Every structure is written in C-alpha cells, then in structure tokens.
Image (cartoon, rainbow, N blue to C red; front, side):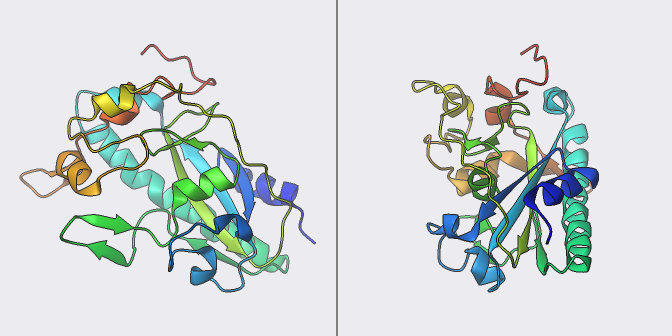
Length: 231
C-alpha cells in the first residue's frame, strides 16, 4: 500500500513545491456537479499540489512575462498530475488527474462566469496547503499567493493533512479589496464579470495577456515567508 508520505514525496519529485491530501468528505459544500465524486465516482482522496510562480514576475512593467509564464505553469501542473497518476496506477491505486485550468464545461456567457470542474483553490485549502485570502486566492504562509494548483483524484483513503484554521489576512485589512480597479472583490468572493473585464486583453495580433494582478501585487503576503519581499 502506498502511504501519504510516499505520495507527497512523489509529487515533489515530479516538480511540485508542496503537496497535501484531503479526504473526499471535506468537499461536502461543493456545488452540485463540482464535487470530486461528480468527476470520479470512486474518489476517496484528493491529492493537491502547488507550484510557485516567481513573485516579482507580476511587478514587471510589461504584461508579457507574467502572461507567458502563466501559460507555461498550467501545463507543468497538468504534467505532474498525469505522471503522478501513472505512477500510482503502477502501485495499484486508480487515479484521475484534473485539469488545473482549462478545459471546463460551465460557462455563463451573460455574466462571464466560468467554473472549473473542481475548485482548485478550495481543494488547496481543504488539503491544508493554505487559506483563502480576501482576494479569494489561496495563500500559503511560506510561498505566498503566487501559487498555482493541480490535483489528482484517488480511489483509496490516504492519511489526510489538517486544514489550516488560522487566518492569514488581518481582520481589518482591505488592501487587496481597495486595490482592485474593477471593485470586483467583497472579501468573500469575486465578481467574475467585473474581474474579467479588467484582467484579460488581446494584442493587435491576437495574443492573450493578463493585464491586471492588482489584488496579488497589493497583498502583503504575496511573497510568503520563504522569499524576502521588497514591496
């Protein structure tokens, strides 16, 4: 039998910075259709892993470095999930890798609202990899909010990691909320219609660029304790 420790060590050996595990019963509040068992009915554990983007990349004056590397890190996470699932299968564990970003099925064009088949940020929280900040991003104490998330659904019960209960955001902090130029944040959720209007653009040649990271930039926890931040 594969242990939780072995699974996490394997994920890190494949390129993840951190890995945590959540039992499927922690996802009781998932919307209908977005529960891990809606994706894979045999799921008993959700293996979640993160990779950190260099913190300073969003401080570049050009939009190109962050946009380009965001499009690189998503397939990196998907490859970790795929390879992890392959190795687990050889060890007798059935596993299903979940796309860390696209494709997804749900899209409400009227309000520009999309939902991945599994909420990665909530999965990260439930696997003990951080807490959800007021900007709705997963924030890890050591790595900050520049973490990107992947997941694998497994058919056995692994020993889970504890959920982090303490808040990272100071109670009265509104820095990220006030930094949002679209006023899309209320401290609990994000208005996707407003957020998308201000966060995605196209160049004259048709390249997609992420043009707004104001809530990430403004957060005092952006870089985490393992990185010395000058901001």
